Amino acid sequence: LPQIQVRPFNMKEVANLRCLDPIAMDTLVALKGMIVRCSPIIPDLKVAHFSCCVCGHDHQVSIDRGRVEEPKQCPSCNTKDSYTLIHNRCIFADKQLVRLQETPDQVPAGQTPASCITFCFDDLVDSCQPGDKVEVTGILKAQPVRVNPKVTKLKSIYKTYVDVIHFRTITGMEGKTGAGGTGNTNKSKRGVMKLTKDRVQELVELSQRPDIYERLTQSLAPSIWELDNVKKGVLCMMFGGNHKRVKKHTKLCKRGDINILLCGDPGTSKSQLLSYVHKLSSRGIYTSGKGSSAVGLTASVVRDPETRDLVLESGALVLSDRGICCIDEFDKMSDATRSILHEAMEQQTVSIAKAGIISSLNARTSILASANPVESRYNPNLSVVENIKLPPTLLSRFDLIYLILDAPNVDSDRKLAQHLVGLYYEKPNVVTPPMDTELLRNYIDYAREHIHPRLSDEASEELLTSYLELRNPPGGNVGNNGTRTISATPRQLESLIRTSEALAKMKYSSVVSRADAKEAVRLLKVATQAAATDPRTGRIDMDMINTGRTEVERDMEESLYVGLKEFLIERRGNRLAVRDVTRQLSEISNTQVPQDDVATALRRLEADGMVQFNERNQSVFVRTGI
Image (cartoon, rainbow, N blue to C red; front, side):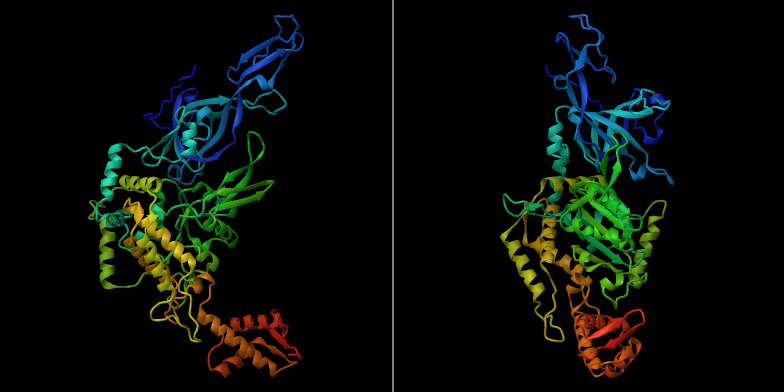
């Protein structure tokens, strides 16, 4: 007969992880936290099968509180201590260790997060994954700990754990429940929301409003004044595009997550926008660039306290799978930490090869990063690469790069000051957002789960036409030497497709329209192309983001190389100081030549075998054979 198991949940009082005391032993408790690790499935012995080695008599014993009472004497042949355990005839159940940790908003000031060990059984196994915020209902128990696994002597301090009865995800809505008999369903349809029919009907009716795009923009971070274009780009990131497979029967998948970089002056509410997105998203991690390490973002190898085996502890990117990872102070992150983001932002995986563990973990997450300029304020005479000192290979992986500048203006400054002062009134004189946080979260999560728009013929034609116009603008994007600068790359075309799909999701539309494609092109122009504008010429040059150098800089470097080569040919066999070479070149060209550029050109000449460059003494010897 099938066994019926009752799984109570939704208790009135939810206990704190650090407030569990001995009074709560063997009682039903409810805990809230975030799952940081799930162990592999452990076989848990339920019924032990013994067989007499003399006469073959079988005897089964049920496990009582973790202890096995081995029979002392065989009733058939009266032989003592003749029973042996037959493993393949015992009955085992599934068991899994789940480590629960306090969420950041529950941790008291100045303390580290507390954690608790929980054990789940049977159909609760694999009902949740690391990174999920859950409410656990279970029984708090204590277990003695041996001094040595080979010795029966016990310690006087007991170890506490929770036997889980029920799991429920908490995302501001009624989440999936780990109820009996639905373990496999939760495993295959992970993250399915259980909204009421009235709530779904309300969301669908809301999506039919013609001003839904503006209502969503006004509802996102209402305490931040203006920045409408930035909010629209962040909304596209939260809705996301479609994760699609290019061809059937192939493993080539295209990512649908959108990555955004916010770069600008201090005090422009970048960090506040990141905090709001983190609180609004159902799944995600908030971290800072200075306080993050490479293993903290990917995964670390630790020793399991139970089995003493080496296991992987998931990092921020893995815990943010199918969510949003917010990284503040992105420019202050070390180069070693920043280098591991290349794979996660494009392939959306994290490869690990440590301590004999070789694995590839999913990191299907959107990255929202904020960075400050090197000189504290953004210098409009320098490019984005020169302002924030980020590798071009990493910058090119961001779909949208927003420049948030603090430009003085009397009218805008007055409105901003009135808005900020209004936030500190006892009765705030601030316009209430059209949608509250709960409704906005439900609207976004339902669209991510159920709405998967496809490109229409009109949208495809609009995207193709717009991409060709970006590559070949009508006015011409021709440099000084007659060559065309690159104003768009295939990565920008993929960004346009993802952004247009996200815009269609905002309207709960199953088809991407021409208007969605036009809005995606507009967002790209006001964001990334503004960041890719060369301050020296005013022209759009995507090579500045892709390679870190504009076409003008490449032309200047090539002309300096040719001029330096001609200058050194006339001085064969001599040793010259780099300072003197730089001064004479500046006099010949009537322009100030940077000494670093001269050193770069000398390295190229040394690679060609023409000179011998000594960087320590800052001198160069011109070979006689050139």
